[in-house]
Image 1 (cartoon, rainbow, N blue to C red):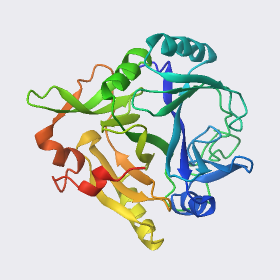
Image 2: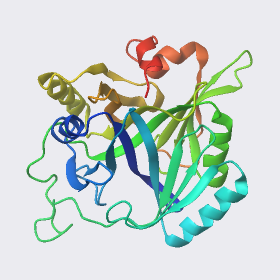
Image 3: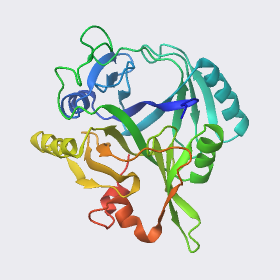
Length: 316
């Protein structure tokens, strides 16, 4: 499969109530690498060890926790300009604006827009490649399997977000018909089983790159997720979280949806994080998986096979 158009989630900017406790959590417990600071805007930039681009996670000190925006890397400047026209022509988005190059360090211009669920999204084509420090004879030449000096859980990459909002139909239409995503999995409800309440969307061969859950709210953030290599790494993450007295939400366990092995926990501001492993490879000819309302328990937590109200109702 040739990956073109929107390639992958590129960054997420998360609001935190106090910057330094959040930095300690994301750097020392989650194990991301701090790469830059912007004192004027009170932001700190991070990357995961196996990411090659300059940064993927941005923390901004604010009065309210949550997500400012999620950014997506596209394959070229030409695609960025084309999608800007397509998004505007669709009539599905509001507040389209161009963010100048350099507003994020080592990053080109970004197209910012608000989608029907009230979330702010961005598209961009350029971010400086800084590598993963694994090469032994130069960048990406004869690499080791991982670099020296990793801290904490040390996920491979920022992987996806799960978001809550009201206009799920408009958002799915935007992502699928305009941005070129596919619905890998869906959760259906209603007397005829034809009312979508959850959509797991992919622009790659992952089980999902973003997920949306229908809720009577605008622009809410459920979690940001980071990839690990194995189930054993998920269990070790639980040990690291307990050792650091980090608030664990649920897990380790397995999702029915996407088959991911997972553990959830909170940063000091109450934003939910996930680290996970597993899943499956998605290709465009793979049928969409459907979960019914009656089987929501095992869909979300396959081992317990029952819903967890706190997991569903706590978001920022």
